Image 1: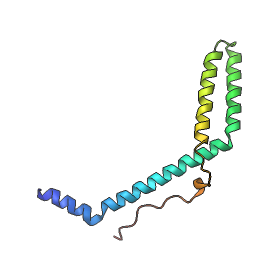
Image 2: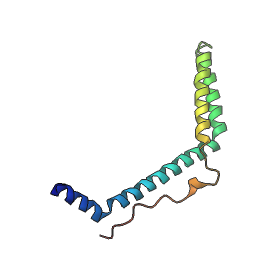
Image 3: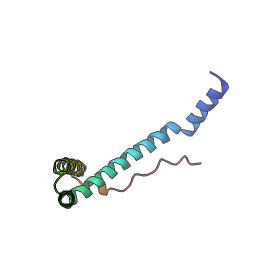
Image 4: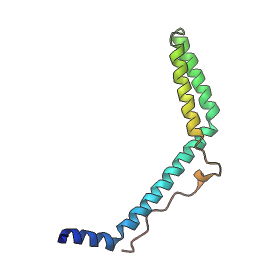
Length: 110
């Protein structure tokens, strides 16, 4: 092993970068999980409103096009409604989205 590689490896070990990266990765994963939960909670709380707005939009486009796009509109509306439902299903059952945000990586004390 060359001196440069040994120096780099020693610096990584001295700074405990692997531990800091693991902590940062865990915090990012927890934050992402909380974000998904929060989006799911919001979608679940507003599911009926979202479906109502999709119905209204479908009706308006159908009116403007004179019914020429009814089949396509049904497919688009169905896909969007399914998307709302998928996001709403991500809502946590135990209120986990309301937890405090994750702490940052531990301080190196330097």
